[in-house]
Amino acid sequence: EAGVTQFPSHSVIEKGQTVTLRCDPISGHDNLYWYRRVMGKEIKFLLHFVKESKQDESGMPNNRFLAERTGGTYSTLKVQPAELEDSGVYFCASSQHGQTLVETQYFGPGTRLLVL
Amino acid sequence: GDSVTQMEGPVTLSEEAFLTINCTYTATGYPSLFWYVQYPGEGLQLLLKATKADDKGSNKGFEATYRKETTSFHLEKGSVQVSDSAVYFCALRSTGNQFYFGTGTSLTVIP
Image 1 (cartoon, chains in turn yellow, cyan):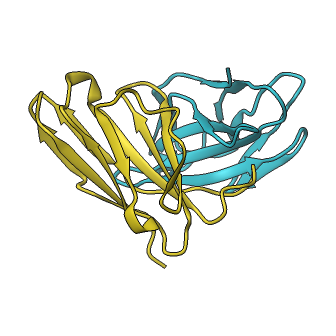
Image 2: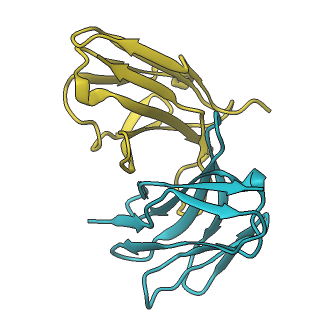
């Protein structure tokens, strides 16, 4: 069974440009999560999809970030325009049910974003 | 709000040394607690978890016990190997269903 995949693995862009990150969850997983780790700090929750609906987007830092999950399969996270402080590693995770405290979330390898 | 505080690294140990990585948490209610590990070039993998007080999670020789009285979930391993070199993240999952992670502790094990 394929795991969670993310594309690209690395992205280097200039301030003001736009970047789109993609996440493909494990097949059959309704729940998809985005997280971000800024250098040296904790991994922070950004948002949670259940199928194509945003269940919780309380962690999104500002309106420069737009996440979509059309059709309830893969998800994209667009940053427009990118700022220096957006640099970090963006992780995606998926789980099948998402309704219990004990269910495991499966993480992708992350996308390393550097904004210059 | 809910949060996790874990021991800062980096940590460097010789092979077969004893490992402890401290983790304490703040949470309302009764969270579940997790340790995730990230090997170089890979995503986070669940290492172990505990869902209620006094539960002990264990995997690959690692252990952690959910201590409600000290709000801790310290990770331990009796004898580390070079292959254990990775970044370790302590996390909690709150009743609000969100994950809160610590800052990560980088472990390097030298032969």
